[in-house]
Length: 76
Image: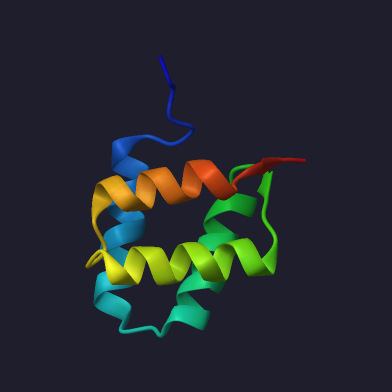
């Protein structure tokens, strides 16, 4: 069984921030990097951008956000 690195509440708060900010994919990637670094994870710029495009393409789906953040988060 796979354990998610982030709570649904954390992901929902991030989602709301992104939905209300009107950011483009590059800025969304920056916000995702900040979210991860604030929780002790690293992430490459390229991985954050790819994740941002995937999240944008999903309409900011919670499930996709969870999957992408779990995928790109690297333990520092």
